[in-house]
Length: 125
Image (cartoon, rainbow, N blue to C red; front, top):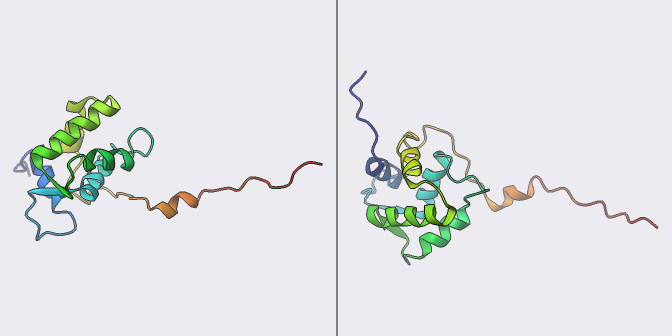
């Protein structure tokens, strides 16, 4: 029972880099997989941190996938932009569990319209 190794940030990086495709090497991570990881860790909340924020910062590298070192730079930029404690964010990402252990809802643009309530179009005379 006590034989489990403690989680590490680079170990979590490899696991989330392989998300949905175990044939991947785990040396690079895509924006989708990085966002999924941050959603599972409850860092992306669509209020303070959004997928737009991560997308803009990810695009700075002009690559579709980042290595661990580049991803750490991306994470540092995100923490500086949003004024977050980087060590706390790293700890949260390390301890959020393996991919899929916690259900993650990745919203699609259509989902934002499900709660739309039109304004009453009747105008007083």
